[in-house]
Image 1 (cartoon, rainbow, N blue to C red):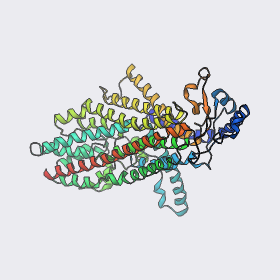
Image 2 (cartoon, rainbow, N blue to C red; image 1 turned 90 degrees about the horizontal axis):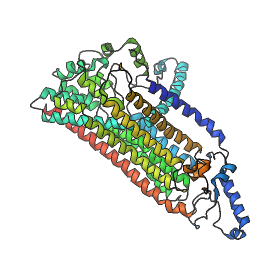
Image 3 (cartoon, rainbow, N blue to C red; image 1 turned 90 degrees about the vertical axis):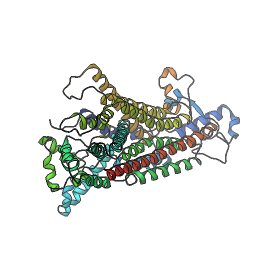
Length: 556
């Protein structure tokens, strides 16, 4: 059957492009001016009570002023605020802390992380034309740069949208690798052939066994070859180290976040700084995806397999082994594949089902012992992986939500609810991931049931919520859409019937700002320590797995 993008991938691409196209549109609708409104309300307060004219603390400050006492409260009712400023206040380019913090400090460094996250497909860039004549090569290079930029943006959107299932899939892969190595270590003398198969599975289990007759080549060139042990040692040495993939980006991210926390101490009355810290912690989800996916030892670049399988053949003949792929699918893969065919890595979120292919299909099954097969098919590792992934998603989102929640006006505003929606959407997608991998059948021709339609509907809602909250929330934060009367007060006043007695705080650097600013530092510090700890654990895990594989190969 020809390989075509799934409905979910097509919908994701359409919604992503829609969100990107919304950015320049919403930027021209921000005509609210809350500093001017604050000054107008201040003058109205003085006219109502002339004694306030001599109070130097009744002022609309732009930022934190530590040499002065906290500013007095200047507020207006939500209904009156909406009448005077019905829209939002667009971010100003000359006020850097409104947009430069989340953009340069945290969002751009996310590029370094998403590049390290493995994927089997990308947009074709036409790099074969670079060797043409200079004029054609220059035009091709400029076009490739634009395509590459779009490709990275779409991949960032995809990682944000599927962060939960990606983390769950990576953790599950780590659990299965641990089980495979545990069996290999116990069967070095009693079942050396099975131990060799288990070690091989640890390295190549992330690849699709149906593509390129991979399982058959593993039998011929590793399991039944007198040089199989040496080939696995060479394959292990070709895998990139954890530090080479995410070590340097983690250091820069943690350094930027630590500096943002240090800088926040001098701006404890500035709401923009507080929300920048919150969004920086929220973007830590992308960092966690990169850390967890880089911790596992599975192959992501099929070129490593081409190197170890080239014992009696040239690399040019390797694609001819693609006997399970139609011409249409092969053409699609050759154009959109991130790596050269015939071998294709599985998506992070689908590797649990990919592991089943190594045991269920008679053509692709490796000689695994029953205990390892039972572990691969067990629901328990998937449940624990989903539970741990939910925790890794929930903690940064909870920290970001609390920072935005505790920033005056205290309550569930647009930003804090945005973080909550994203966390909820990812936990639902993790639940769908667990349900999909535990399905009793893998047949693509089975009819839709009520339960499958319900799961599809739930996953679609969660996917839309995740995209709108993450990408849409980021765009609205950068553009300034969140600076409106309802977001300044609370979303509980969204309906007109609930606005009785509701007020909007217009002044900055009030006592409430200074008192609640401690949560920026405390929660932000805990968040950066949490992400740093995950990075250290990821490095320690991969180092230990490498050592275990090396020790098993030495004793075989």
